[in-house]
Every structure is written in structure tokens, then in C-alpha cells.
Image 1 (cartoon, helix red, strand yellow):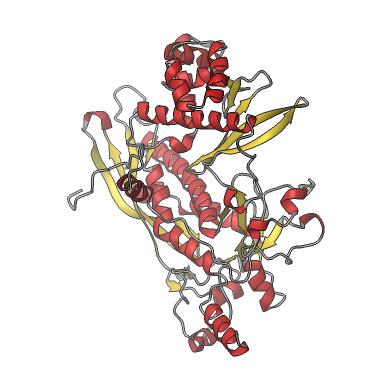
Image 2 (cartoon, rainbow, N blue to C red):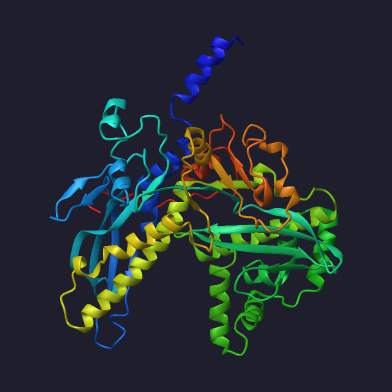
Length: 521
């Protein structure tokens, strides 16, 4: 290819502001869909009003959330449009007001006698806005207009301005959630086979391990249960009762069936009721039998493979799906023991996912909304105790959400105990800014060797720059995207995908059909 053609192609590629495009697309997706999805997850705020005899219960229903463009409130009370350069010079945050529909409802929801006490759209706080995103005030400005307000037309954007400082959110690399990964572990000097999955739902991440011990028996460990639970006991508690059904769900292969028969012979329980009782004794030892059964059911519904739990699906179906998933993990363990499959490579890029600005902001907004919900609950209960009129505008304190959103971006200390998530933009030169926006960090500890994680992997070709990485403890853990790399974004509706798979003849795919909302609703 001639040099002139190369020049035309490179100019055409990089003239479309692609270098920070992954930040814009991710953050815009969060503003358009992500915020509303987090509000839908929360749906309502329960209160303790109504616990006393003769009192009617009160709760708050959350509705649509709306965000405008950045504004600043002046000393005289007026609100003006805020531009990034002004935020830098005045040491303020480039943020926009967030509004949400809220309704205070009184009455018993089970008896359909609830009634509206107050309803309003109220300002719940301020959201820091990414420079150059869809809600940024300078998004569609021409070069001349940018120069007039003191902006650099060549500035790529993709960062936030908090208290006058420019902060960029670092793209975080992590193992793929909800995917079965197999590996060997040298526990107690012996090699054991392990299948694990990081089950993730609504910000909650639970590690579920299925391990084949030295005796050839399968054990499962998951959060809220100390130690490990026998595999057969757990799948029986989930509804797979007969020996034949358990073996059939794991595999039809004769050698794997032989392994499974060993597990069934050593089984402690034979029925679902016995299995739940045994589990109850583990999770609530020393408590009454009724409490043990209740706690056992709660644990397997909430903490075991939470990504398979969906609203609108019958509980028995969800438990059966969890049992089938565990059987798939057991099959993977046996295949590894028989050397029919290789251990999964954790450094392979197909086994990794990247958290960009929008994903990180979603985690932050979920935590901030929970904090706001607790504060609204407290304010409602206090107003009720003092016999004051319950009003949406008086129970919402907007600084609660604002503080929870701004402080992590300003300090870099993120939810989940992570640090260094947001960093000051490197303004040494223009290339330094572009490099910082395309930086990628690993969650692994800098103090540990992690030789394999630091090495170049063949699957990084074309995705990760092979030379741009720091020297010293961060070597290979802090990386940069390749110059022409584009990041794909998961925006597919899960139900739509399931419907398409069902049309193609894939069995066992059940889309959740929810009733369509009419205009009257």
C-alpha cells in the first residue's frame, strides 16, 4: 500500500474521535438505560411504619429517572449552564441535576387498599458528567465555539471534572462472570480438579466452587455456608431427587457415570426434604428446626448461583436451573480428571471482561441509591413520629446521593474496596492524555509475582499494546489498548437473544415474557 493511501486511511480512522470512544459509549449507555435499570431493581423503599398494631404501612415507589445537562447554582439562587473550563477555573464539579419520580403510598399492598399520599418529581442529587458525553454542554460545539469559551478543540474528553480536578476512570480487567472455568489445585500436596464460576447479579458477585476431592467425591462451596457441601446433598435440595435423574443430568458417558455412582453410594440423604434439613443444620446449627429450614431455603435461593435467579420465573424452575448448572460444573470436573479437556487459561482474553466508565458508574450509582433509600426511610419514619405531613420534597435530601457519587471519583476509592479506580489525567503532553484514556488495569496485587498474568499472551494481539507498560511492580498489570482497538459493548436484550435462539431450535431456552405496559398503565 502506498504511503498516501496509508495516510488517508489513518486520518479517516482517527479523525472520528475513536481514541476515547469506548468511554463515551459506555457512559452514554449508563445515562440512557443503566440508571433506570438500577432504579427498577430497587423499585420501592420499605419503611417500619405500620409495624405497630392499628398503623397503616407506608412505602415509597420509585418511578422514572431523568438527568439534564450540567448547571451551576449561583449565590443569588439562579441556575446557569456550566462549561468544563469554568468548572476547572472555579474548582467546582462538572455535574448535572438528577430528577426522579417518587410516590408515597399508604395502605396494605396485599389487600389492594393502598392510596396515594403524595407524588412528585424531586431532585435526588447531582451526577458528575463526562466531558464530551451526550449530556455534556459542549458536545456539538464547533472549533470556533470551543475556542471562544476557552476549550481546546483537540481535547479528546472522556474524563470527569470533580472539584476542579480532571479525573479519568481506569478501565478494569476482570475474569468473565457467569462462566465455568476449570483448573487443577495442589491442595494438601495432591492434585484436585476444580470447576468455578463467578456468579454475578446486580453488583453482587459470588464465587461458587465445585471440587473433586482425593476420594473422588464432589463438594460445592459458596458464600454464607462455612466449608463445603456434598454435591449430591445440594442438587437433591434443589429438586433433583432420583439417582437416575442426577446421573442423566451430569453425563451419559460410561466413565463419568462410574464416578457419579461412587458419589451416589456415599450420599448422606435420599430425598429433597432430608437434603434441606441437612443443609439447615449446617447454616443455622443450634437453632429451631423451622428456622433451620427457612434459613436453608433462603441461602440456596439468594447465595447459590445468584445470576440464575430472575423475577417472574417460578421458584421450582429457578432451583432446577441451578441444579442443572451444578451438574454441568460436575461434568467439567470429571472431564478434567479424565484429561478430556485442558484446564482453562485465566489469561486468555476470551475469559476476561472489561469494566469501562459506564459499568463502574453503575456500581457507584447502585450503592449511592441504596444510601439515599436508607436516608429517605429514616426521614419518613421521623416525620411520621412527629405527626408531620408526609411529602416527597421534604423526605429527600439531595446531598446524600451527590456525596456518594462525587467522593469516590475524587479519591479513587471505589465500592467493593478497590482503590486507584479514578486517577488524575496525565497532562504532560497530548499523547500522555490519549495514553491515559486507553489505559487498562488488572485487579491483581502488585506485591505478588503473578508471572503468567504479566506475560504477553497470544490473544492480546491486536487488542493490547505489547510495549507500553510501566517498569517495576506494575509491569504487565497496567497495560494500554492497541491504537486501532475498538471495544464492543454488551447492549443486547437478553430476552431478545433467547427468542432468537429458540427460533433456531435451541432447546431449554425460555425467554421471560412480561406483560406490555399500556398507555393507561
